[in-house]
Length: 356
Image (tube, rainbow, N blue to C red; front, side, top):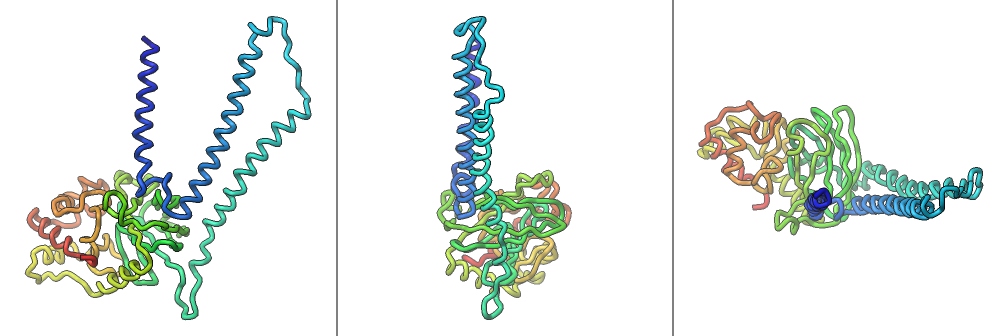
């Protein structure tokens, strides 16, 4: 009976592990399928560490089993005295030198990569015209959304980061409320966003995102620091383009300069948005940082609030009761609209696009 139960426990454990590991296999979110040079190098360090760990476990296990079976009292007799090896210089050298060698094998590439990833000096390099040569994005983490500012291009996005492939993209990371952590699992390791200082690092995006996740076309980004009741929902998306397509996207974003919503518009959604939402949300990518997410490309997004379906229905539900979907967000209680007005706003937001 007990033997059968143990088998079922083992079966259940293997089932759970299979489900868990299968979730790690998608290109748009898996750390085990890196889509950039930084992620690949970090995965190599992980594999090296794992190999050393398993090698030590196997060797120690073999020694233990040999000692266990070879020197059992039933085999050697009650009066057997094992060979005494205290003071053996040979053994002392072996169990001192081998760990040092293993630590050196692990430490040298780890330290080399750590210093390499921390080198952000290229952020300040300029060309003969004084323009910065590397793309820099200022990332601001807020409860519970992300703002991405491109200072050299003079544009801002929210919830969706757009970057070029095959070049280093540098990030300035900061938070406005509590500590968060910026993480794109498939592209590279995470880094904290603090309220009292800027952290800097870079990532390389080696693959275009357009074919990922059955056409959704984005990598998934996460907050990796427990930051409040909606921490698990603080997602963002990353769209990667080749350099010409990225330059086209930047030009389209800059062309939204001056866009706004009119309270006198015949469009009920636009007029309601102007009266109830425009104070916090801009509809121009050149408007500068705002209290709420910039909505200039809302119609081009893949998700609403980072995780909901990008539909008029879900957008209406979100506007009517954001606290239900993201408890603790700073949007709750800031406006008062009817359900008809909320639906009209949702339909208006879907028209805010630079791609359609």
